Image 1 (tube, rainbow, N blue to C red):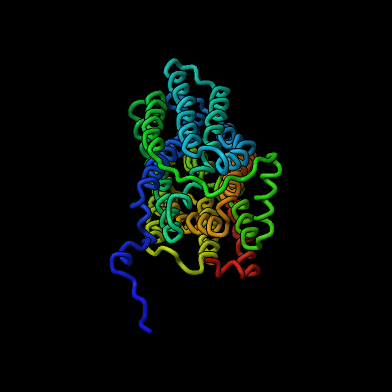
Image 2: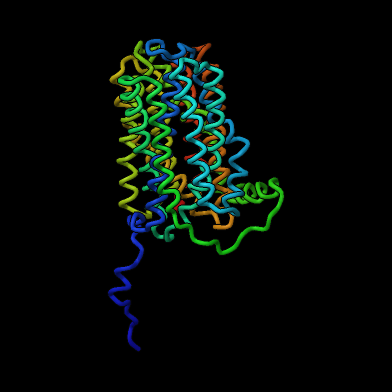
Length: 421
Protein backbone atom coordinates (compact mmCIF):
# COMPACT_ATOMS: atom_id res chain seq x y z
CA UNK A 1 0.00 0.00 0.00
CA UNK A 2 1.40 3.41 -0.96
CA UNK A 3 1.00 6.58 1.11
CA UNK A 4 -1.60 8.99 -0.26
CA UNK A 5 -0.03 12.32 -1.19
CA UNK A 6 -1.68 15.72 -1.32
CA UNK A 7 -1.55 17.34 -4.77
CA UNK A 8 0.76 20.33 -4.84
CA UNK A 9 -1.95 22.71 -6.08
CA UNK A 10 -4.31 21.66 -3.28
CA UNK A 11 -1.60 22.10 -0.66
CA UNK A 12 -0.87 25.56 -1.97
CA UNK A 13 -4.56 26.45 -1.62
CA UNK A 14 -4.70 25.46 2.06
CA UNK A 15 -6.01 28.21 4.31
CA UNK A 16 -3.32 30.54 5.60
CA UNK A 17 -3.91 31.75 9.19
CA UNK A 18 -2.59 35.19 8.26
CA UNK A 19 -4.36 35.44 4.89
CA UNK A 20 -7.92 36.39 5.84
CA UNK A 21 -7.55 39.49 3.66
CA UNK A 22 -7.55 37.23 0.60
CA UNK A 23 -11.29 36.69 1.19
CA UNK A 24 -13.16 39.56 -0.60
CA UNK A 25 -16.14 39.49 1.77
CA UNK A 26 -13.89 39.80 4.81
CA UNK A 27 -11.89 42.55 3.12
CA UNK A 28 -15.05 44.62 2.59
CA UNK A 29 -16.16 43.98 6.16
CA UNK A 30 -12.73 45.10 7.36
CA UNK A 31 -12.96 48.36 5.40
CA UNK A 32 -16.42 49.00 6.83
CA UNK A 33 -15.17 48.20 10.35
CA UNK A 34 -12.26 50.60 9.89
CA UNK A 35 -14.49 53.53 8.94
CA UNK A 36 -17.03 52.76 11.66
CA UNK A 37 -14.56 52.54 14.54
CA UNK A 38 -12.48 55.40 13.18
CA UNK A 39 -15.50 57.61 13.77
CA UNK A 40 -16.64 55.96 17.02
CA UNK A 41 -13.22 56.41 18.64
CA UNK A 42 -13.12 59.99 17.39
CA UNK A 43 -16.68 60.49 18.68
CA UNK A 44 -15.79 59.56 22.26
CA UNK A 45 -12.72 61.81 22.13
CA UNK A 46 -14.42 64.81 20.48
CA UNK A 47 -17.52 64.69 22.69
CA UNK A 48 -15.32 64.55 25.80
CA UNK A 49 -13.17 67.38 24.43
CA UNK A 50 -16.23 69.51 23.61
CA UNK A 51 -17.73 69.03 27.08
CA UNK A 52 -14.46 69.84 28.89
CA UNK A 53 -13.16 72.54 26.51
CA UNK A 54 -12.96 76.14 27.72
CA UNK A 55 -10.89 77.62 24.87
CA UNK A 56 -12.61 76.81 21.54
CA UNK A 57 -16.27 77.39 22.27
CA UNK A 58 -16.86 74.16 24.20
CA UNK A 59 -18.97 73.78 27.32
CA UNK A 60 -16.24 74.05 30.01
CA UNK A 61 -17.98 71.22 31.85
CA UNK A 62 -16.88 68.88 34.65
CA UNK A 63 -15.43 65.38 34.49
CA UNK A 64 -18.80 64.06 35.69
CA UNK A 65 -20.56 65.73 32.74
CA UNK A 66 -17.95 64.25 30.42
CA UNK A 67 -18.56 60.80 31.94
CA UNK A 68 -22.32 61.30 31.60
CA UNK A 69 -21.98 62.06 27.88
CA UNK A 70 -19.90 58.89 27.38
CA UNK A 71 -22.41 56.97 29.50
CA UNK A 72 -25.20 58.13 27.17
CA UNK A 73 -23.36 56.72 24.15
CA UNK A 74 -23.06 53.28 25.72
CA UNK A 75 -26.43 53.12 27.48
CA UNK A 76 -28.45 51.83 24.47
CA UNK A 77 -26.16 48.80 24.29
CA UNK A 78 -27.54 47.69 27.65
CA UNK A 79 -31.04 47.40 26.16
CA UNK A 80 -30.43 46.69 22.46
CA UNK A 81 -27.26 44.69 21.96
CA UNK A 82 -28.77 41.35 23.05
CA UNK A 83 -31.72 41.88 20.72
CA UNK A 84 -29.28 42.85 17.96
CA UNK A 85 -27.35 39.65 18.61
CA UNK A 86 -30.54 37.62 18.22
CA UNK A 87 -31.35 39.52 15.01
CA UNK A 88 -27.90 38.76 13.61
CA UNK A 89 -28.62 35.02 14.05
CA UNK A 90 -31.86 35.34 12.07
CA UNK A 91 -32.13 38.47 9.86
CA UNK A 92 -30.20 39.74 6.85
CA UNK A 93 -26.78 40.51 8.34
CA UNK A 94 -25.70 42.85 5.56
CA UNK A 95 -28.88 44.88 6.03
CA UNK A 96 -28.12 45.25 9.75
CA UNK A 97 -24.57 46.32 8.91
CA UNK A 98 -25.72 49.00 6.46
CA UNK A 99 -28.49 50.26 8.75
CA UNK A 100 -26.00 50.70 11.60
CA UNK A 101 -23.65 52.70 9.36
CA UNK A 102 -26.35 54.91 7.84
CA UNK A 103 -28.05 55.61 11.17
CA UNK A 104 -24.79 56.61 12.86
CA UNK A 105 -24.38 59.46 10.36
CA UNK A 106 -27.53 61.22 11.54
CA UNK A 107 -26.55 62.43 15.06
CA UNK A 108 -23.12 63.55 13.82
CA UNK A 109 -24.70 65.62 11.07
CA UNK A 110 -27.01 67.20 13.67
CA UNK A 111 -24.04 67.93 15.98
CA UNK A 112 -22.23 69.64 13.09
CA UNK A 113 -25.29 71.76 12.37
CA UNK A 114 -25.87 72.76 16.01
CA UNK A 115 -22.24 73.64 16.68
CA UNK A 116 -22.30 75.70 13.48
CA UNK A 117 -25.07 77.90 14.88
CA UNK A 118 -23.70 77.84 18.46
CA UNK A 119 -26.58 75.82 19.90
CA UNK A 120 -25.07 72.46 20.93
CA UNK A 121 -25.93 72.58 24.63
CA UNK A 122 -25.11 69.76 27.03
CA UNK A 123 -28.64 68.34 26.84
CA UNK A 124 -28.31 67.99 23.06
CA UNK A 125 -24.91 66.31 23.49
CA UNK A 126 -26.46 63.68 25.76
CA UNK A 127 -29.51 63.13 23.54
CA UNK A 128 -27.47 62.80 20.34
CA UNK A 129 -24.98 60.53 22.09
CA UNK A 130 -27.90 58.28 23.01
CA UNK A 131 -28.97 58.16 19.35
CA UNK A 132 -25.41 57.32 18.30
CA UNK A 133 -25.42 54.51 20.85
CA UNK A 134 -28.62 53.04 19.39
CA UNK A 135 -27.09 52.49 15.96
CA UNK A 136 -23.76 51.40 17.42
CA UNK A 137 -25.54 48.71 19.44
CA UNK A 138 -27.37 47.56 16.32
CA UNK A 139 -24.18 46.91 14.36
CA UNK A 140 -21.72 45.65 16.98
CA UNK A 141 -22.83 42.00 17.32
CA UNK A 142 -23.18 41.43 13.57
CA UNK A 143 -19.69 42.80 12.84
CA UNK A 144 -18.17 40.30 15.28
CA UNK A 145 -20.48 37.39 14.46
CA UNK A 146 -19.74 37.65 10.73
CA UNK A 147 -16.04 36.83 11.14
CA UNK A 148 -16.42 33.02 11.53
CA UNK A 149 -18.97 33.03 8.67
CA UNK A 150 -16.66 34.75 6.19
CA UNK A 151 -13.34 32.95 6.78
CA UNK A 152 -12.15 29.38 7.36
CA UNK A 153 -11.60 28.20 10.92
CA UNK A 154 -7.83 28.17 10.33
CA UNK A 155 -8.04 31.84 9.34
CA UNK A 156 -10.19 32.99 12.29
CA UNK A 157 -7.36 34.18 14.58
CA UNK A 158 -5.85 36.02 11.63
CA UNK A 159 -9.23 37.61 10.87
CA UNK A 160 -9.68 38.64 14.51
CA UNK A 161 -6.17 40.15 14.48
CA UNK A 162 -6.95 42.04 11.26
CA UNK A 163 -10.17 43.25 12.87
CA UNK A 164 -8.29 44.37 15.96
CA UNK A 165 -5.84 46.13 13.67
CA UNK A 166 -8.72 48.08 12.10
CA UNK A 167 -10.01 49.05 15.52
CA UNK A 168 -6.47 49.91 16.55
CA UNK A 169 -5.88 52.06 13.48
CA UNK A 170 -9.08 53.88 14.37
CA UNK A 171 -7.84 54.31 17.95
CA UNK A 172 -4.63 55.83 16.62
CA UNK A 173 -6.09 57.95 13.82
CA UNK A 174 -9.52 58.84 15.24
CA UNK A 175 -8.53 61.02 18.21
CA UNK A 176 -5.30 62.24 16.58
CA UNK A 177 -6.91 63.38 13.32
CA UNK A 178 -9.93 64.77 15.20
CA UNK A 179 -7.57 66.80 17.39
CA UNK A 180 -5.80 68.21 14.32
CA UNK A 181 -9.05 69.04 12.50
CA UNK A 182 -10.61 70.48 15.66
CA UNK A 183 -7.61 72.66 16.45
CA UNK A 184 -7.43 74.02 12.90
CA UNK A 185 -11.10 74.22 11.89
CA UNK A 186 -13.17 73.87 15.08
CA UNK A 187 -15.81 71.44 16.32
CA UNK A 188 -18.30 72.05 13.49
CA UNK A 189 -15.96 70.83 10.77
CA UNK A 190 -14.80 67.94 12.95
CA UNK A 191 -18.35 66.59 13.41
CA UNK A 192 -19.04 67.07 9.68
CA UNK A 193 -15.92 65.14 8.64
CA UNK A 194 -16.86 62.30 11.00
CA UNK A 195 -20.31 62.05 9.38
CA UNK A 196 -18.71 62.01 5.91
CA UNK A 197 -16.33 59.15 6.83
CA UNK A 198 -19.28 57.07 8.03
CA UNK A 199 -21.06 57.76 4.75
CA UNK A 200 -18.04 56.50 2.80
CA UNK A 201 -18.08 53.31 4.89
CA UNK A 202 -21.53 52.43 3.54
CA UNK A 203 -19.93 51.43 0.20
CA UNK A 204 -17.91 48.42 1.48
CA UNK A 205 -20.81 47.43 3.74
CA UNK A 206 -23.04 47.05 0.68
CA UNK A 207 -20.33 44.94 -0.99
CA UNK A 208 -20.03 42.34 1.80
CA UNK A 209 -21.09 38.98 0.31
CA UNK A 210 -22.62 37.18 3.28
CA UNK A 211 -22.95 33.39 2.80
CA UNK A 212 -26.32 31.78 3.54
CA UNK A 213 -26.79 30.23 6.97
CA UNK A 214 -26.70 26.47 7.35
CA UNK A 215 -29.73 26.78 9.63
CA UNK A 216 -31.84 29.55 11.14
CA UNK A 217 -32.85 29.30 14.83
CA UNK A 218 -36.55 28.95 15.49
CA UNK A 219 -38.20 32.25 16.36
CA UNK A 220 -38.73 32.52 20.11
CA UNK A 221 -39.19 35.18 22.76
CA UNK A 222 -36.16 37.36 23.37
CA UNK A 223 -35.72 36.09 26.93
CA UNK A 224 -35.54 32.51 25.65
CA UNK A 225 -32.94 33.57 23.06
CA UNK A 226 -30.84 35.29 25.71
CA UNK A 227 -31.23 32.41 28.16
CA UNK A 228 -29.86 29.91 25.65
CA UNK A 229 -26.74 32.01 24.98
CA UNK A 230 -26.23 32.82 28.67
CA UNK A 231 -26.61 29.14 29.61
CA UNK A 232 -23.89 28.23 27.12
CA UNK A 233 -21.55 30.76 28.75
CA UNK A 234 -22.41 29.77 32.34
CA UNK A 235 -22.08 26.03 31.70
CA UNK A 236 -18.65 26.39 30.13
CA UNK A 237 -16.13 26.97 32.98
CA UNK A 238 -13.63 28.65 30.67
CA UNK A 239 -16.12 31.04 29.09
CA UNK A 240 -17.46 31.85 32.53
CA UNK A 241 -14.04 33.10 33.67
CA UNK A 242 -13.37 34.95 30.41
CA UNK A 243 -16.68 36.82 30.65
CA UNK A 244 -16.09 37.59 34.34
CA UNK A 245 -12.70 39.15 33.59
CA UNK A 246 -14.17 41.07 30.66
CA UNK A 247 -16.85 42.47 33.01
CA UNK A 248 -14.26 43.47 35.58
CA UNK A 249 -12.08 45.30 33.04
CA UNK A 250 -15.13 47.06 31.57
CA UNK A 251 -15.86 48.53 35.01
CA UNK A 252 -12.30 49.44 36.00
CA UNK A 253 -9.39 49.65 33.54
CA UNK A 254 -11.27 50.50 30.34
CA UNK A 255 -13.19 53.57 31.64
CA UNK A 256 -10.10 54.72 33.56
CA UNK A 257 -8.06 54.90 30.35
CA UNK A 258 -10.71 55.75 27.75
CA UNK A 259 -12.61 58.38 29.79
CA UNK A 260 -10.86 59.55 32.96
CA UNK A 261 -7.43 59.93 31.38
CA UNK A 262 -8.69 62.94 29.42
CA UNK A 263 -9.85 64.64 32.65
CA UNK A 264 -6.59 63.63 34.38
CA UNK A 265 -4.55 65.39 31.70
CA UNK A 266 -6.60 68.57 32.15
CA UNK A 267 -7.10 68.63 35.92
CA UNK A 268 -3.98 66.95 37.31
CA UNK A 269 -1.37 67.78 34.66
CA UNK A 270 -2.71 71.22 33.75
CA UNK A 271 -2.85 70.63 30.00
CA UNK A 272 -5.63 70.94 27.41
CA UNK A 273 -8.16 68.07 27.29
CA UNK A 274 -7.32 67.82 23.59
CA UNK A 275 -3.80 66.67 24.52
CA UNK A 276 -5.24 63.24 25.32
CA UNK A 277 -5.02 62.51 21.58
CA UNK A 278 -1.30 61.71 21.63
CA UNK A 279 -1.41 59.14 24.50
CA UNK A 280 -4.40 57.49 22.77
CA UNK A 281 -2.42 57.40 19.55
CA UNK A 282 0.56 55.75 21.25
CA UNK A 283 -1.70 53.19 22.89
CA UNK A 284 -3.09 52.42 19.44
CA UNK A 285 0.45 51.98 18.09
CA UNK A 286 1.11 49.42 20.82
CA UNK A 287 -2.11 47.54 20.02
CA UNK A 288 -1.19 47.54 16.34
CA UNK A 289 2.24 46.04 17.02
CA UNK A 290 0.92 43.20 19.17
CA UNK A 291 -1.99 42.58 16.78
CA UNK A 292 0.47 42.13 13.91
CA UNK A 293 2.40 39.63 16.04
CA UNK A 294 -0.80 37.66 16.66
CA UNK A 295 -1.73 37.85 12.97
CA UNK A 296 1.67 36.53 11.85
CA UNK A 297 1.76 33.70 14.41
CA UNK A 298 -1.82 32.62 13.70
CA UNK A 299 -3.21 29.98 16.06
CA UNK A 300 -1.00 30.58 19.13
CA UNK A 301 -0.75 28.12 22.02
CA UNK A 302 -1.78 28.90 25.62
CA UNK A 303 -3.97 31.83 24.64
CA UNK A 304 -5.65 31.82 28.05
CA UNK A 305 -2.42 32.46 29.95
CA UNK A 306 -1.40 35.15 27.49
CA UNK A 307 -4.78 36.85 27.88
CA UNK A 308 -4.50 36.95 31.68
CA UNK A 309 -0.89 38.19 31.64
CA UNK A 310 -1.87 40.95 29.23
CA UNK A 311 -4.64 42.06 31.58
CA UNK A 312 -2.26 42.08 34.53
CA UNK A 313 0.22 44.20 32.57
CA UNK A 314 -2.50 46.61 31.44
CA UNK A 315 -3.80 46.97 34.99
CA UNK A 316 -0.29 47.76 36.25
CA UNK A 317 0.26 50.41 33.55
CA UNK A 318 -3.10 52.00 34.36
CA UNK A 319 -2.27 52.13 38.06
CA UNK A 320 0.97 53.96 37.22
CA UNK A 321 -0.91 56.40 34.96
CA UNK A 322 -2.88 57.60 37.96
CA UNK A 323 0.42 58.24 39.80
CA UNK A 324 2.00 60.15 36.88
CA UNK A 325 3.31 63.64 37.56
CA UNK A 326 4.36 64.58 34.02
CA UNK A 327 2.86 64.25 30.56
CA UNK A 328 5.85 62.34 29.13
CA UNK A 329 5.32 59.57 31.70
CA UNK A 330 1.84 58.99 30.28
CA UNK A 331 3.31 58.62 26.80
CA UNK A 332 5.52 55.72 27.89
CA UNK A 333 2.80 54.06 29.96
CA UNK A 334 0.13 54.24 27.25
CA UNK A 335 2.50 52.69 24.70
CA UNK A 336 3.21 49.72 27.00
CA UNK A 337 -0.51 49.56 27.82
CA UNK A 338 -1.23 49.28 24.10
CA UNK A 339 1.25 46.43 23.62
CA UNK A 340 -0.53 44.47 26.35
CA UNK A 341 -4.00 45.46 25.13
CA UNK A 342 -3.39 44.00 21.67
CA UNK A 343 -2.90 40.54 23.16
CA UNK A 344 -5.82 41.06 25.55
CA UNK A 345 -8.23 42.03 22.74
CA UNK A 346 -7.21 39.29 20.31
CA UNK A 347 -6.96 36.44 22.82
CA UNK A 348 -10.25 37.23 24.57
CA UNK A 349 -12.39 37.46 21.44
CA UNK A 350 -10.62 34.54 19.77
CA UNK A 351 -11.17 32.26 22.78
CA UNK A 352 -14.83 33.20 23.06
CA UNK A 353 -15.57 32.72 19.35
CA UNK A 354 -13.52 29.52 19.20
CA UNK A 355 -15.65 27.98 21.96
CA UNK A 356 -19.06 29.04 20.63
CA UNK A 357 -21.15 27.09 18.06
CA UNK A 358 -22.17 28.99 14.88
CA UNK A 359 -25.89 28.93 15.67
CA UNK A 360 -25.22 30.82 18.94
CA UNK A 361 -22.51 33.14 17.62
CA UNK A 362 -24.67 36.26 17.21
CA UNK A 363 -26.23 36.00 20.65
CA UNK A 364 -22.99 35.16 22.46
CA UNK A 365 -21.29 38.07 20.72
CA UNK A 366 -24.29 40.14 21.79
CA UNK A 367 -23.46 39.21 25.40
CA UNK A 368 -19.81 40.03 24.67
CA UNK A 369 -20.77 43.47 23.35
CA UNK A 370 -23.21 44.02 26.22
CA UNK A 371 -20.37 43.66 28.69
CA UNK A 372 -17.81 45.49 26.59
CA UNK A 373 -20.04 48.41 25.57
CA UNK A 374 -23.13 48.26 27.79
CA UNK A 375 -21.35 47.95 31.14
CA UNK A 376 -18.45 50.23 30.18
CA UNK A 377 -20.51 53.46 30.47
CA UNK A 378 -21.66 52.48 33.96
CA UNK A 379 -18.01 52.12 34.90
CA UNK A 380 -17.33 55.53 33.36
CA UNK A 381 -20.23 57.12 35.24
CA UNK A 382 -19.29 55.48 38.55
CA UNK A 383 -15.61 56.37 38.27
CA UNK A 384 -16.50 59.92 37.17
CA UNK A 385 -18.59 60.36 40.34
CA UNK A 386 -15.81 58.94 42.52
CA UNK A 387 -13.22 61.16 40.79
CA UNK A 388 -15.20 64.27 41.69
CA UNK A 389 -14.79 63.32 45.37
CA UNK A 390 -11.30 61.81 45.67
CA UNK A 391 -9.51 63.11 42.58
CA UNK A 392 -9.03 61.71 39.10
CA UNK A 393 -5.55 60.25 39.64
CA UNK A 394 -6.58 58.43 42.82
CA UNK A 395 -9.64 57.01 41.10
CA UNK A 396 -7.63 55.71 38.13
CA UNK A 397 -5.06 54.02 40.37
CA UNK A 398 -7.70 52.62 42.72
CA UNK A 399 -9.73 51.05 39.89
CA UNK A 400 -6.60 49.61 38.26
CA UNK A 401 -5.36 48.25 41.59
CA UNK A 402 -8.64 46.41 42.09
CA UNK A 403 -8.38 44.96 38.58
CA UNK A 404 -4.81 43.78 39.20
CA UNK A 405 -5.78 42.00 42.43
CA UNK A 406 -8.72 40.19 40.80
CA UNK A 407 -6.90 39.03 37.66
CA UNK A 408 -3.87 37.89 39.71
CA UNK A 409 -6.11 35.79 41.94
CA UNK A 410 -7.81 34.33 38.87
CA UNK A 411 -4.46 33.54 37.26
CA UNK A 412 -3.28 31.61 40.32
CA UNK A 413 -6.56 29.79 41.11
CA UNK A 414 -8.12 29.13 37.67
CA UNK A 415 -5.23 27.33 36.02
CA UNK A 416 -7.45 25.54 33.51
CA UNK A 417 -7.65 28.86 31.65
CA UNK A 418 -3.90 28.87 30.91
CA UNK A 419 -3.97 26.14 28.26
CA UNK A 420 -7.02 27.38 26.35
CA UNK A 421 -6.42 27.47 22.59
